[in-house]
Image (tube, rainbow, N blue to C red; front, top):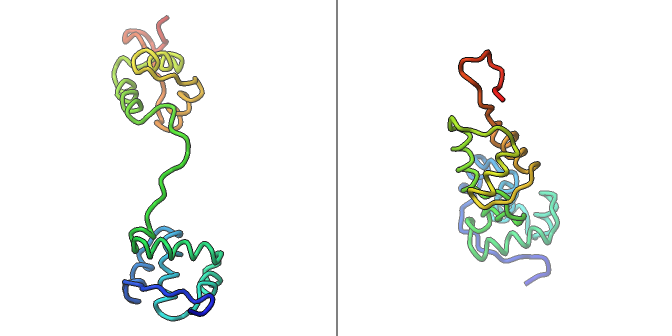
Length: 156
């Protein structure tokens, strides 16, 4: 094997790869498919050439081809799982919170939501975290209990 020339069997035909390139929405996946296309159509002979054309480091392209070799196109295009820290308020708790926010009971304040999360669901969450979740992510707000007979002024 000559230095820099990478032997790889590409299962997909040039036409299949060309079609995939046309319909792929993700830029990251397009690059990966493009490398396979360049190699299968013999437009490039080495990884270095392919990397140069798509503007990526040779090692990055080698990593992609290793993934392809190990698990095909599916493995090459697989999304990476988030490596971030787990959410303070898990999805299941968020669903319960949404139900409660939608109910007629609602909440009077973000502080009350924090208390409810702690007492009912056993989740300790800071005021700021609760506010960001409810206001920005859920697009909601704690409901203020109003007397239906009044002129819209909250009852105290």
